[in-house]
Length: 458
Image (cartoon, rainbow, N blue to C red; front, side, top):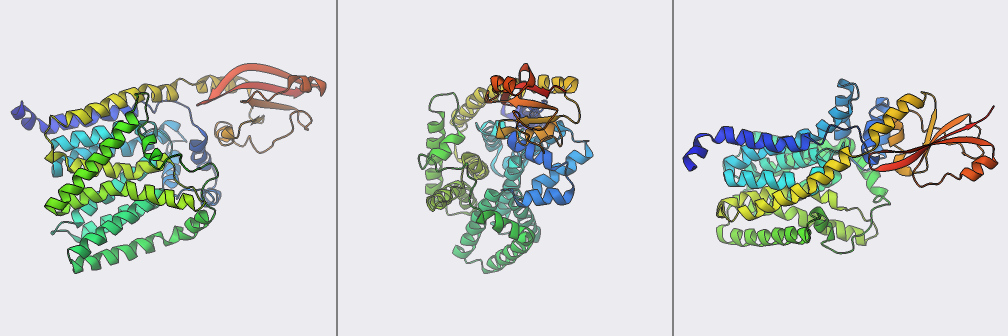
């Protein structure tokens, strides 16, 4: 068996990655978008200046939105293309496992890394969201790979350049990717200081200055957004470790506790291993695994000052680094012992996949779009009683949300009203002499509503 695996290793690796890649791709073939996804899709249709003005007021940097705009322009605003844009970095991360991780740490580490990354419970949902998260994961991982090379004695100038470029790309994708890179930069400097690598300290200084200069164009916008405080809907977690547990919560009882204990045990083991070996690879692995705890502590401390900014999905960015660092330690673990965590990844992933599949495909979106094509004219007013549809409606019905007349006494001829909260008072409509037709239950993505056609008789 060992001889067979070694002889056909490349083919088996390609098939392994391809089989895993099918899973996120299978979630992309639907027409549903939700509130946050609709923002980027809506902005992509705006003139460039207006799009940038909207982004400056948002809570995320612009790189992903610029990528999305380009893809949509090239594909005629294809929603499938937008979803596949989010799937692409997931596939590239799997390839990273099959190349960098396999080359540096072995086949066991590759299998561990790819399974953990893909089947981490919250990951499957993010793989197909028309959002920036998967690209943030990928850029941070690429920067960590270059950090691995920078810690070696035979580093090259290109490693500094690539580390700087990938760090900037991460920083321009998500603010918690920027924070993650801050901790990696600190870990890199700490290593060079302890090993008295003064020439590398100088290289680190040049790299840091270049990174700051590269981020200056967005710095005023970042400072403006930070000065606004955290989003109003973000609250402090009920427990200090609750945000990490939420990353691993599934329908399987205690799955979040099992994962949390697993992370802590491996972290302690690597800390002990570093004390014994004191080598660059173990330091790198521990650095990658430490970032999630530093980000968590920063978010909790900042929140206690009155500015809650951290939610569980933001921790997925440093979690990817944690998985990468844990993978480096697989070479010290018996392959039979690694079966247990890999089975855990598969079981939790297979329990999450059907739920995510239903969320993507078992919706009323297609029925609603068919109804709209048959009944709702181009110039009709479409409004709703739900703020969660404020960006979804302009995506499916461009330029329809500009007017919000009072449905009971407003000056209008006809309105299509998407009633999410059963707020339409039919008796009041009758009293005001407004005609109406209830066309029944429809929906977009995870938001269902009744469609009312309101009109005033001439």
